[in-house]
Amino acid sequence: MLFKTNYEKAYRSNRWSITLILLSLALFTRIILSFAANYPNLVENFYSATAYPYIAKLLGFLSGIIPFSIGEILFVLMVLFIIIAIITIILKPGFILNNPRKIFHYAIRLLASVYVLFYFLWGFNYFRQDYLILANINHSPTTYSELKELTAIMIEKTNEMRELLPEDENGILLIEENLQQLGNIANDGFKNYKVGDIDLGGKYGRIKPVFLSKYMSYTGITGIYIPFTSEPTINTDIPNQSLLSTISHEMAHQRGFAKEDEANFIAYKANINNPDERFQYSGYYLAMNYLMNEVYIESRDDYMLLYTELSDSVKRDLEFAGEYWKTKEGRLRKSVNNMNDTYLKANNQEDGVRSYNGVVRLLLAEYKGQR
Image (cartoon, rainbow, N blue to C red; front, side, top):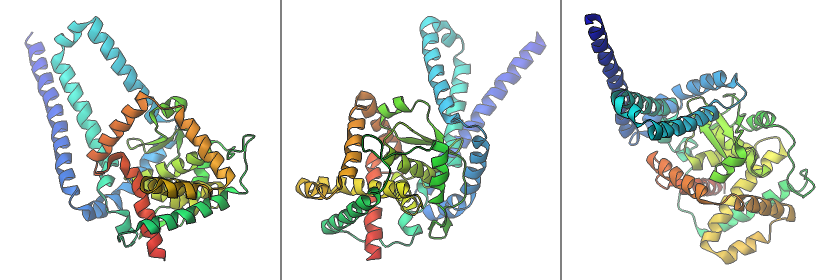
């Protein structure tokens, strides 16, 4: 009896020790984050440009041994766990009432561990130096006239690249390779791509398809980077011209560029520098789309005039994409969009989901710098 009592005391003591250690690590992480927001140069020098590439490549190598997405499996298991927990609460409320301390400790440990790992494995990249600073691009105010000029240039480039590309029976861009092959091709766009002194070349681990892609589209999500396993996971059900940009976008996240506008810009740059003309088209299509959206906000008349300059084949791709996403609209998509907006704002992106459109700022800054 005495042995049992001493064992229970030791067990309770150890339980609190582990919980307190993890809570302390979470608090320590939060303190670092508060400093990181004000010192992006330190984040850049001591994490993003130094430690992080090794973390990503190691995790990418290990997770790349398995051909399917570990992150997706963990997500499905988490959903099943939540469902089982709800059923247990309904059918056996006594289980919760009889084990409140255990449940409390496990919940706190899990949340603290996820919080700490998220930032140390990738999340600190949200606080790294701005792309414009790293790439030595001057950012000065731009005019609406410059926006229209660049949009017209991107339309011309998009039309030119689309002209000789293969099409399916419906006149839509044709892609026949599997995702792994496309990932290898996409990697060619990152060769010799430097942001200042930072080399984005090299291999960081394989990209992976989302098996539940058709259902994922109802959330409006085209891809997710899993920082715990360094896995760029791709919704393979989306229109092909968007698929190629999404692959490069998630690969940009994997290379340490967490902000959405910067990942979009890097996807554009990597794709137009890719030897594969389909990727080049996807890059110009991405930039053209964002620029056209900004013009539409400023002037619908100008938007319509610019739209008439698009080739018939590009219009077919645009209309196909529009019809595709129209069939996926609903409450789930709005809910996920709101959650994503909250997540982005909590991670140093004040514009939330509007930060995706921030790629226009980068496109215009580069355009002005090249004039």
